[in-house]
Image (cartoon, rainbow, N blue to C red):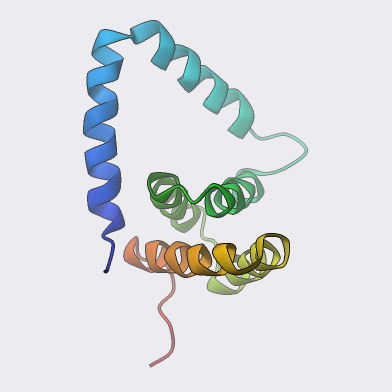
Length: 118
């Protein structure tokens, strides 16, 4: 089964919009937490997104993989950088993480990241 990460995050965003309408304080708090966690500091934005992707793989969260793949492409993350981080995911998480590293790579490519050599 092939997953379409653009559709996954579009559907997730639509459902989150419903929550935003019904529970605005919750979503404002989450968005504030996100902004604070991803704000540049000792670590740059790309490094923080690589960490977020690693945790998305570990948590096996398809929407998370989609959102962070999109962000990594915007940050100009190279395929080599992504694959090195995914290697650490496999090291730390074993076989299940290996399966989700394939998903993370597919999502990265779907959002326009470097394509595999033909």
